[in-house]
Length: 492
View (cartoon, helix red, strand yellow):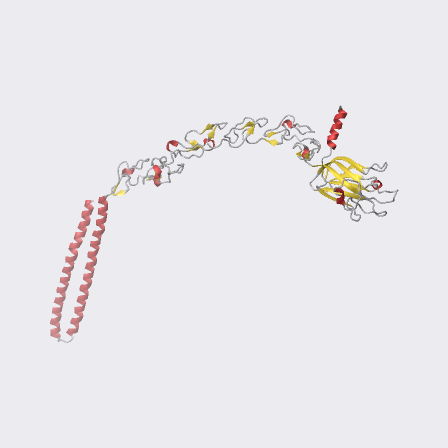
């Protein structure tokens, strides 16, 4: 039974996959006429020779010690299951002693994995299928023996067709279409059956246990993982051991993998462990954490907060469909249409009822008393002010204030008029003196003395008249002005 199972496994491993030679490039150590290295990877699949059908390295019997043909994969690396070789017909002796290498470098002589070496117990078959089951970047056909001692030729390579079967690393299946299990170390598996080449990686497996050949997690998966290999993450909408239970409908993001509770809260309009409870009246938004206090009766949409009544708002809020803008400082009432009391400190009041936030300023209030909530002067106003908040001047005070400037103006005007008249009289007297002096020079001494006496009398008469006039102007006016000012003071 053991032998049968081993044989079946071996058959799976060596079963040919797809030919990988279309995915790379062939080169050789030298060229004979037009026989290129690429001829070996194109049909026909036969041993028939032709310079345009087979590869051929140069012929030399003296200075050639080795010959080789090399294929490089176009992708990073491949797992080679087998290599098929069709050598030139009737030239098996030149194939004698060849070697096949799987390597990761193009070094010659090859330093990689020796997949096969001809035993040199006779001429080899010109058509061969060689199992390799190895991972590498290059496949190298190498000959350093040649056809001696029969024909004395140096090493020569003549390949008419080569097929390199296997899969690119990380894939398996008949057409290499299946990904290797994530749990396979380096995601490396056998192309024939998908079993892990280097064992399994238990990172996502519960208790760090997995099968080395299949990579399956034997005890299940760790949190937020699912699938045979625990390579899949649970989607954000499911929970449970197999991620087959749906999360609550109103979760904001994924739910707890074990309990199903919403790990990141609820969507707008919902609350509770399972987010199955709608927001209570007056609340809305994420986890019902916002309030619609500005809406009438605090009634709003639980998701976006839009007021049920969109044409009016509670006092203290500006009208809008959400009623979420409070009155600016200094205003209150419906639609913020009223101004705060000027007696409120900094005219700052509560927007919903107008009461002072920081109390009132009693500067204009009688006895310095005011209501700290309404700003009203409780004992009335100081003299000269009136109104509920004592911010209006009384009518009597305004009348008194307007008459005082008029009285002062009349007084000053009288003084200025007296000064002007005094200056005029002085000018006239001075002028007469100059005329009289000129006339005195022309008369005799007697007449001069008599005339001077008469002039003196005239001047005295003029001066007395001027003084009387000045007194008539000044005395009554000054007395009346001061009397009016005194009377005004008494009336106050």
